Length: 289
Image (cartoon, rainbow, N blue to C red; front, side):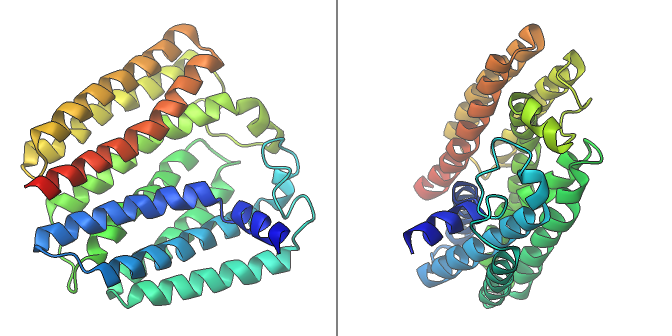
């Protein structure tokens, strides 16, 4: 049982799944605060359903890439390529999680369920195969990667409505993913090449790829200031977003100058820190209003 739990955590990419659920949960609390009350039962439903749906998408991703995962040092110990879990077992688990998660989220409202299914499809069946064909895969993957804030926000409403808040939450996470993925792709480029993945803007570690990463961090600054500009985020959020954005930019600028893995690691780890801090600051602004 201990070995199965360990393999299951690897199949669903537990840390990534928690990050996605965290992002959706923050947006749910923001949407709830806008209504003046938090329905904690619905929060639990979102958390459980979001965990299952995200786990399913990651499971499908590993099933599709099982032969490629064998080629890379980073992924060769995953349960399917290592032979500890059969493809059929992983498929049954992923299908169950996907169906159960969708049915759970539909209980909140129909739009939340539809967006969840859409995110599975985009991530597992469009982004995943595109990774070997073109760097545009990062652009495609940014859409399912940015859907959790939308899903979480809409889950807070019986009858979801479009407003600037969920759109801006989506945009922040959408733009953030470019320096995030390109930082990771730069660090792991040698390993990715073994599987034929083409994720850097020019498919190689060159100055153009570094400059595009730098430009993405620049674009992220005004986008992250939109909550303050539009009036639903306070000055604490605006100041923190600006400071973090400038630090993030500096890391990316060092990559442009040095073109080395150490600088790319700073971009990568900076991206891990940036998003949850900004999201928590946004939630703090809503709570203290």
